[in-house]
Image 1 (tube, helix red, strand yellow):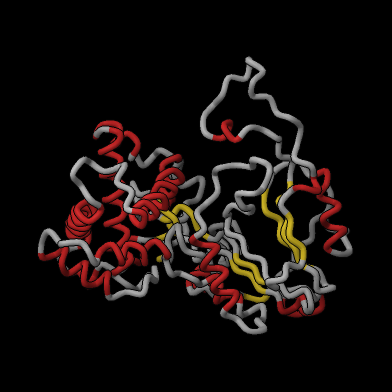
Image 2: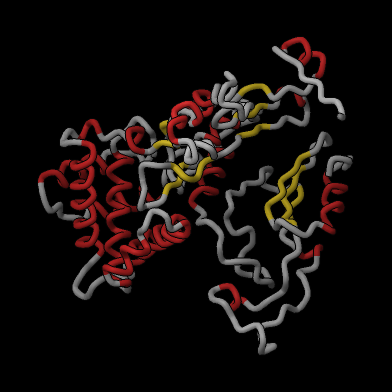
Length: 388
């Protein structure tokens, strides 16, 4: 990869790539760009993707690998841009099974919206795409709320706020907090209805690492089911309007208990925070305050390009975020930008341990640095590594 002279050469170098199978996006100094789903993917039945299958019967054998030339690829598309956000990269007409564990298309749609809203963008303009925080499911729930009869006065106030909202999951707003609490309460009720209360409680356990991934996919499916008026997961006699009314009341009750009665103080930033943890802080809790970087209030959620995903069991802790933001300019590498959530040093004693946090929170970036003369002129220290 590091020796490729152009995009086509880079693609050719990927022919023998085995793992991980992932999205590779690229651009070169000649003005070419592309996308490649790289890695070896076996040819197998679509039925193999849902549940484990017996491997000893000979009925579920792989039939070789998807040929490299038939892997999902796009070079210089007519649209003039490429957008991807862990969504399914192929349509239903693609002849091979790849996987079922793709994220919904909410984020990639907002990325596309951000890209198309820019005219001759610079590397710095890409921050506007990184900052996209409108939640498509939130807008869908707004439509449902119009038919909801609130169960109490607090729910009525919460409903009014949600209907007077543009769907932005902004840290300074209270609507994202109400919407998320309502949606999580709805998910919990769906669990209890279909799994029984005991199993639902087991599935809701915060230590269950699978909950976040599974629940986010079910959340996306519920938004679709509401739009289709699919009642198959509801109790007999219920409608989405009645279930959402209960979810709104339960969510508001939980927020009142945890954040107080003043609804104007329920800002998303109060509970939705990234809480970075040093690996040694658990072993040495007395040093946790020195080892752990400060918490970072975060906008967004799991459905927005400005990623801020969380587990419904622990909504106060962001577990999925953009660990690095980049914007490259192949026409002038010195214009390239980047930022990370913390800093460039992993040493808790360094002032670079988390000095990028505020820049990252504000969805800004810093120069990447390619010109060695400029780097040497501006660097604050140098380190020389010699073999022992």
